[in-house]
Image (cartoon, rainbow over all chains, first blue to last red; front, side, top):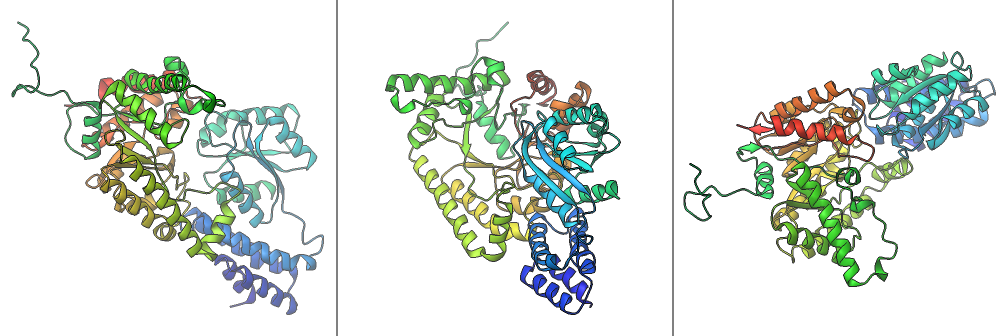
Length: 210
Length: 334
């Protein structure tokens, strides 16, 4: 087994100290930092995401893997060039106005970061104006809106309409998700994408940014 | 010719069953005739439905300053709110959310409901000591404890269990007030449970089983609620022996038919009317979903009709009333 496979495997098991140790070893052996990032750490999180989608792993296993990834990145960061660290895309994410639930949003953020995307977390109770302003300010590729309540999901339509009215519909995609959200609703309000789970959201975001 | 109504205990009279008795029969999965019981974990739309603020939405900033007489009026009004709601929608059970929530006030609100309605309704309260999905800020910290400090977490679970049992023991000194506990810790997302089956077995199931057993030994019924896709842990939940499982969330892909096939010989089933669809679907879609739930739920006994969560703030009242109208027409065991 190569050291990159070892890093991926240790990350999948959530063994943060081991991942850190292996990353240091890989650097010492002269491996390219970008390869360690892509083929070790991100590869491990990708496997976790795939397993999550088919109920082979559950949220705590994702979280503990993400913690191991962060440990690896902390070790790797001083060795990464600006070019290596260039994100695959930028996302602004938040829970819509009137809704204070953050579990789903945080999971999506974590999955996206695990796949090499930069995520700006706006928090909860975010209005359409705040979403669109943040997207412009951060030059984001995607706005991700989360809602748990049927009574708050209507704000997603406001986000879509405001983006369109600002002429950003060709530049900034809008992804939506949350317990009451469906593909039918996504199509109805003219959002660009809906996924049922956090790992699939990361897949879709990568595809949009690719 | 109309015969005079027999007076109980005339030996050939058929005793009128109270809503409480009907609800208990459903929990015990016993045969019933007439309407299948219904209730809601919470019915928040009281202002619109009966012109009264729901008790859990009342803020009593000067409660301690109130005279005993004023407090009594408040208790009576909250009791009326629960009772009028139950009467209007023919609920068989009332989930009481005491406000204020101290023990004496809890006893008083329960007494007030009993004084006004005797044993007509099944009364329940919150009583779940098990861990639920932690919120977004605590998820990582909670998960780290599961991995790195499992014994500490189990000690915390033991403490929570002890508090719940102690409360029930205190409550059992007031017989005839409370009938059961609703155990409302949420375990599941739409796609899957937060806890893996192995984690559930280690950190949740032992405590869930013990609290249910303790409640049962004191004569209390238990209804275990959780949203989301319960299927990977449903067997473990059933093995903890609650009297009923509530929500059966269609947004989480839970099939009432499948739950009935797998577990209806062990546990009663409550819920499954898609509460999200009630808000967002067309009238036809909602109607079809209600009729589907009734058909699947009433394929046998041991079923209580309800939404897959509650009548929440913001839900259109007319949709809930449509659901109840359909239940009155089609929710009848023949």
